[in-house]
Image 1: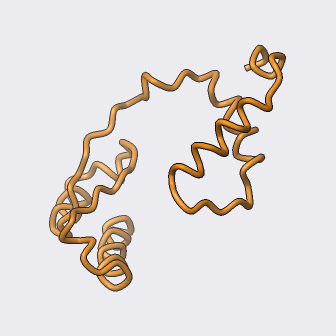
Image 2: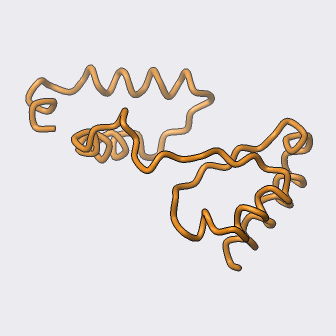
Amino acid sequence: MYYEGLICKLHEVIKEKRRGKLTQGVLPHHDNAPTHTSRVATATIHDCGFELLSHLPYSPDLAPSYFHLFQHLKKSLRGWAFEDDKDITVAVNEWIEEQDQIFSLNA
């Protein structure tokens, strides 16, 4: 029942801090862990007015070799604050351009 409590708490926090967001729709994203997909959790998500999106068991657009890249990218971006998605995209693209060809071959 712990996870269901978190879902209810999330609902209350969104209602308090992001007025109007609940009427626009909330799409929580989580994996297929048994805790997340149980009947009780699914019912709680629907009772809170959240829309549950199905989650693939794997992401076909992410190759396992990309995870080598992510740890270095995360380290490089740690501590930065971004205003919007465009700023993040620019920072990531600049970081990728700074990497040498050997880095890419080691992935």
